[in-house]
Length: 423
Image 1 (cartoon, rainbow, N blue to C red):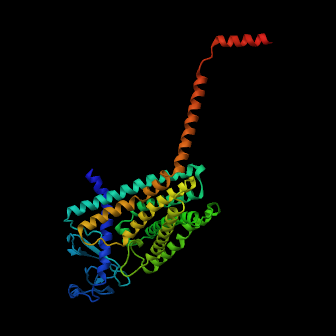
Image 2 (cartoon, rainbow, N blue to C red; image 1 turned 60 degrees about the vertical axis):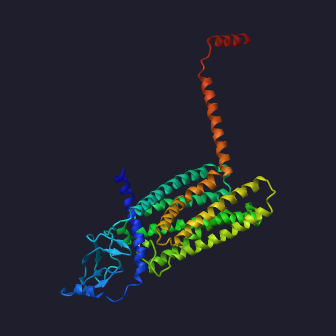
């Protein structure tokens, strides 16, 4: 059991450590001197090399790379200590001297393993990874069930539920891409393979569509309640363009920015001093703020004008607003957590890890519950479908039992006699 758990958590642990190491690496890169360290130059002294070479240099975490002939791969011991973390120095780090006489952009630290001294922190990381995986599995299962319900129940297919259906679809696609992202290991990320860049782009596209379909939910409710505009006049194609179409140019612009200005590490993570990710993060934050304004206005109208109303339509709107009031802050909070620094305190870091893992992985589950499983129209349609199936099944059983009863011979003869007499 422990061996199977270790094999499951291994890739995720390496990915998590890679993200932390990369973030600290680029943060410290700005403080490294541009001058080559004297010890690194001294290491290159006495090495007689003929032909083109890569000059001795320091990388971002001050590992010395001596003068090396072009086309060769050099190995050096892993750093003993970096940013408060001890590493196993018997392992090696690699860097290639390219044919044009320059070093590869980033050294390969994939074999460098940290010496985990804090067993408690390591335990919490592993538990958080398990929560993350289980949460995405639970969300994906709930989302698929909700998707099938909206697809099968044609009697409730109105614009409002079509918007719910599309929102659920974006979460299914995003959760599926989450598992695809786990296939990107360190070597693939360092090689910056085209397929992993495509995966990152698709994942970010579905990430943006999540928030734009939430924006569609807010637009629908605001139009129907605040503007008192007939929802029959709203067109489905407008919401389809908003939810699926608008994120396309945003994602393309982000991909072009990554391609020309930050083309590394499969476009995962951030580089110090560069803000390419704000190309899609900016519109997401904007629609979140607009949705908060919509909901504030909607709640104000409901509290003042619709308090005495008990019509079924108003009740449906109230339920929809309650669901959106719960979901929108939930989605907004989990997204804003990426901009929060938990600090160096162990307790705050552990709370941040658990809080983020739970909310991030269970977003799809909450969407399914509020917009499908607790939807009165869906539940009523399911009950009708179930009663119809029961009636059909019981009628078929009665017919089958009636046909299976043997006919009495006396009745046959009496019937025959009756027919003969009538003739």
